[in-house]
Figure 1: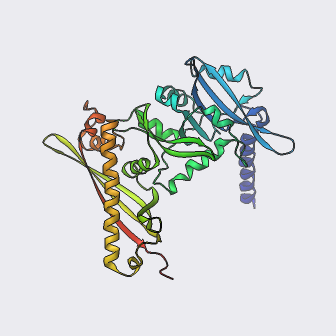
Figure 2 (figure 1 turned 90 degrees about the vertical axis):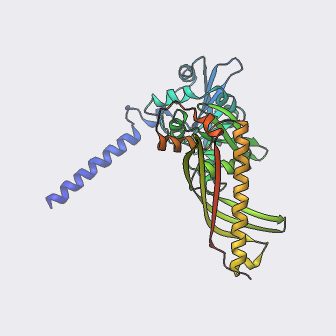
Figure 3 (figure 1 turned 180 degrees about the vertical axis):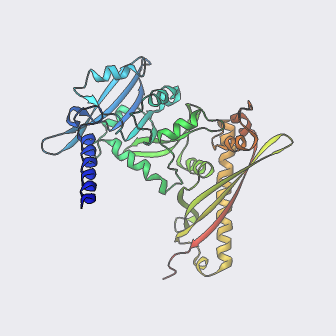
Length: 368
């Protein structure tokens, strides 16, 4: 009996501590006296100063939840905090922001100071999605989407759920960006978002060399990068004769890279395994019952993916001369670090081969 009483007592103490932290916080401030940020944006002004807009929640007595954006501007990124606080009537509650939005202009200028200020503050969150936006982050935050307090909430969900299609990775948060910027043999990519007539859309990837954005892709090129750079993505691959005759293959990708030297030159072999189901078949019904037809389909799909990836590798090496696909990391793991090799130059001049294996796990329910 005494043992049970002690357990209940400990349980009550733990609950009290949890509620205390929830309602008062670690700094002894009630939540009602704090501004709750939804996201953080990074812009550059026309004069070259830093602008950091932060949308915050506004709670009305009727229960409606809206948002307003408060922007700090300064000649230094830390100084924007001073400027922003003089426009706010509450202190900011750090660590609950859902999204980081970097304007294209800022990304091209360089994001190292963003990384530096976030790393030096243990209260901020580094696990949230990060995107590059065509335009000003401030304008994106002011765009209204029905059912959401702020467009940043919508984009957060858009990025988190993108990994189910187009072979996008889940590795687009701030921590992923931080560890790739200065890592040997690695360069980050981020989702590139545009504000279209119907709302925000992912239209490709922003490509970085170190901390600077050097280019952007369309969605077809983004799919190729996702396949070549990441493992575990999902997406639809199609063989299509015309609008009425096609096969859709919903696959999950698995990537393995091998590196070897020939006469002092680096060679890379990217093996792609695509396992999945036939989602729709309007081209050849015999795929469901004829092993030869199925074999032809897998061969055609392998050739299609190999062609798509090889063409983009050649284009990227010529256009960017950057190790977009993280191949230098594989070479570093095999041959050693801190060798003084410029992996961007070395990889772009290397022989990169792609091999694709397609496995159809399920051909659907059958014909009808």
